[in-house]
Length: 513
Image (cartoon, rainbow, N blue to C red; front, side, top):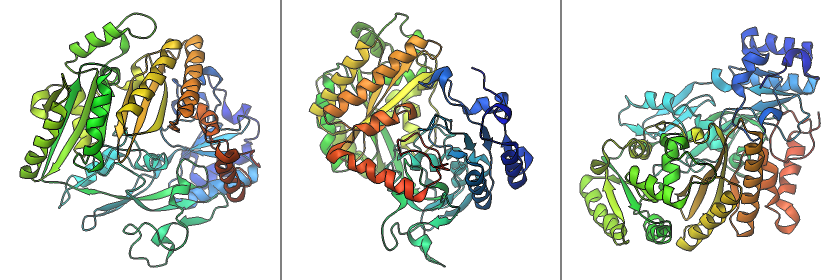
């Protein structure tokens, strides 16, 4: 998959623009050419060889350099793409846009860790592993809620409204105060940060007037340069556990048992209810378990569960606090789930040597972790990840699973998936895993993912996470009252960024450059 040399063959990114960026950032902070840009591309995307290519990548080290970049983009009529989510470049909604990646790796400073009030202020390039290393020597110790890989960015996961695994799992709720550079180059600090000499920027979220922090999530309204995040004071003890049930239909009872325990916060962590295919995909490629073509048969799924010593569905959660309190809560939790026929309830002592359990336990106990293998390897690297929000009920869980399994099997795919229960809903998170080297696989995966988005929306389960290639399909399902919500989004984008200097995969209207 060769890239054209962006400096010479992409129209619109002139030598003058490159010279201006090199002068503003330094020559070593501007990247062009096929080999140098290849690492920014996702070889497992749905777009495949037809994916749009960036014209260049730039690595600013300060807010002032970001402002300079925006000024250059406005003058030379190209768009900037801030790396978010996976840290990869995807096609902007306007495929003809000349796009320059902003790589935040040089804006990777932990600006403050406040142990008294348990918060941190970080730049967008700061990773979970980096902040965790900073926190380990703290007194009192503070935990970091990790929503992705240890090498993932805290700012990215806030921008994408991700959820982690501790009681601090909702990263939008746990964010407090941010700084962003707007398309016109102005710098905005939200909440209490808008007040000179503020004493509470990372302590109180709202300030005075409209609450704007959320406008910088899943949007292209500004380039985030600082994020405040609340940290969890380390509890005296953490007890991760697992509940395994043997049959597909046991999901209904498992979720119904979980619901009151989650809503009352008897289980304060995120509760992950993972299908065995989801667990297996964390540990090894599919070929290790099954060599046949098409969806894995039910008998093979049952054998896989036995081989991995787990159920077809497996719930992971954790308890926190004083040991005496955990012991009392454990009696309630184990008694509730033990009432499900065939269920097995495990503590950490029962799962020693289980790499999948240990990976999940680390995340629930405040330690950034990386899965034993990586779910992206299930079918060789192709992966279209989707997430829908559903009520936390057994009936809704069964209905959602039946829809996606029917659609996935009709298109010839497995669908490794999990329910991520946070407050009163469950995010049904799964992936259409495909062979990225196969054009047929990629086309079928695209059709499959589109069908899942459409059919889940028809059942009332809205897509809240989708590959950039499917952003327009996901947005189209939010069509109530003639699609007025997206009309509002487009008006905001047109007002804040009339020249279209910040690119996005979202259908936010025609670029102005």
